[in-house]
Length: 120
Image 1 (cartoon, rainbow, N blue to C red):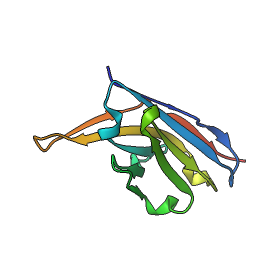
Image 2 (cartoon, rainbow, N blue to C red):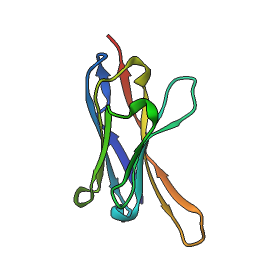
Image 3 (tube, helix red, strand yellow):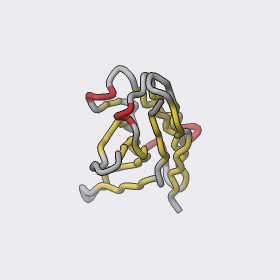
Image 4 (tube, one colour):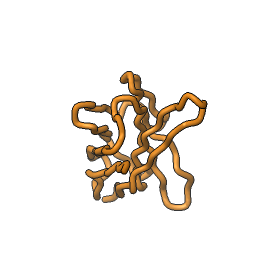
């Protein structure tokens, strides 16, 4: 059974920092591309950051320079360090595991999400 369990969310003041974690089980973690998505109230889910199985990273423009995604394959865990948080960052943050199958389709798993609220 595949599980992605996010943790580390909470309430933080503008300008503050949080570190999200996503612990994976039931998959061969090192072969998956891992992503962080977020969904704000009334908005569509959007990609925040991704780290490939090879360690390459990519970020949505609004978080570049403030967020850092990393992974520790030995721990089956992906992290999202979020600095200089803004109220617009308030959302439920989801962990995502994805790999391309030989058929050309993607195998995708999602976590349940963790709430991040940026407010004074």
